[in-house]
Image (cartoon, rainbow, N blue to C red):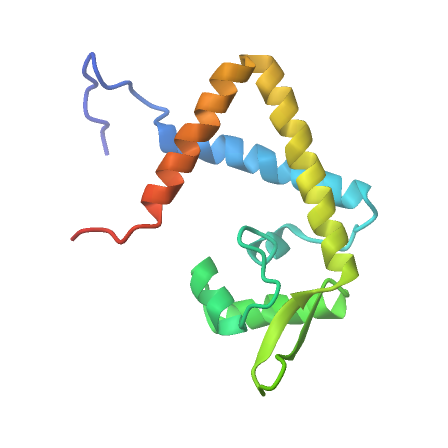
Length: 154
């Protein structure tokens, strides 16, 4: 497959999607290292599917599967692993038989390690590219992520 020629107004590869993926993978690698450095060495990269925004505290497993665009079976497999490791628990909501996913104190420790890592990356990258440019970048990401949650017109 050949890549169509670029025009003066459109840059060529790598396109923004590839660049976002490279940066996203770097952020995940840094978060995983921070989690391990905080003593949670049994946390695996696959567990980010559950430990991503929005966090699953008080969420039904089926809703979690929908949010993460995963099958219920895959989410339940990860939840079973995370439950065995002590990061989450499934318990009934008050006055209901429905079981919801809650973070345990150990799970909140992972979240704290992630947030600390992200704060450090924010400071580092802000210093590298300049605070104003980085703040603009974050604002653009917020704007695009809000747009991304809207239904796609087909």
